[in-house]
Picture 1 (cartoon, rainbow, N blue to C red):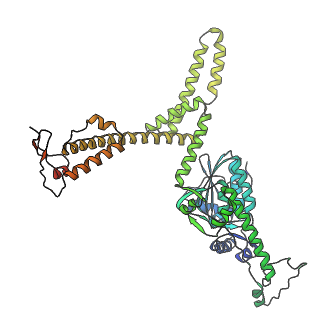
Picture 2 (picture 1 turned 45 degrees about the vertical axis):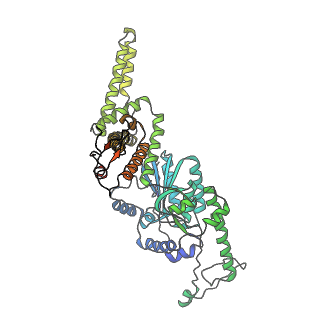
Picture 3 (picture 1 turned 60 degrees about the horizontal axis):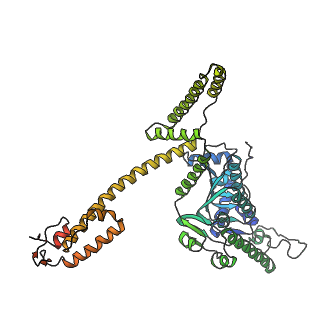
Length: 492
């Protein structure tokens, strides 16, 4: 379903932003940057369509080619997987493609992106967070929505940077994966009060604030901040901080006191420290996360695939491995399947004259209906997986052959070292039968014994006494180090 999106108006300039925001769940740097960005957005006069066109040009075609009026700015489809990219500071409301172009995200953009994917039948979501946080206003509604999404869909979350408000939202899906340099935490918030009274006074404007009660309008930018107003604002920050701690504790299933003492400190951590704090769950490359989720989607679909679809997949996969383009292989497989069904129906109709008309009618019906087919994107992924599996199998076979050869070399070295130590060599079959670790342990043991008996610093010829009392001199060995260590003379 297509809905027309009205032209998105950019937020007001930075000064107005500071007037509007009383609480910020993000880094101080991100607040200053967002203020500057909003000024640029207001001055640019950039429209939604222009912003999206510029993004398409910058991405070199890597963005999805979807209808601009319907597409949500945070959404990128990877086959049947909805990837929700949250980048830059987050702010209340909808910032659209203009916000995305300037590097900020509206909370409503996140919700709209998920709704767009849901309306198109998507059941699997991956959130990628790269945000320093954002405004407190708007986060509660977004948190509630994402919590419900997690309860009804398969959702995973990956962090490149999820600070403050980003940490709040990303942990709704549990502890995140990330890279070694991913940043987690910065749990807390701060408020900014802009006293504009002196600025107005310099411009010759005298302002008078009227209020019905002492604390009504506390924190007004049109007058200096009173101690009473300061206490009210601090109380508001403290209460919101407790809400923040509660959400993190609930999201990660951690005790409230643990979060308060160890995580809600206003500082951020890289991945390994975050893992130690139970704020993150592991380190993994993003592409492997996307690949694993895509494979799970494929497995889920294959469980419900018809016998025809599985046969079609096997046929196409074999053709692609042989070098046939996937489109050609798919068309040929579907055509052959249709012909087989037609032939089967015709043969059945010829079994008796009485059933001829019925069989013919069935044949016409079958031929008229297109053979069922897999989703093209799904098929490409399945075929790619089969091709990759074939390549991995071949690689494994090569590695196994090399491994067996190395086992034989080690076994021979053990036998020669045993002879060098004056003992009977172990049978080759017995050595090849033990596992690799045991073989290496035996090699180390006889090597140490040989080195102790024939140190390199001693003569290369040594005399030993065998069981019959005859002198024996070491014979030459293949290994260069054995040549230096010992020469053993065969017994006569």
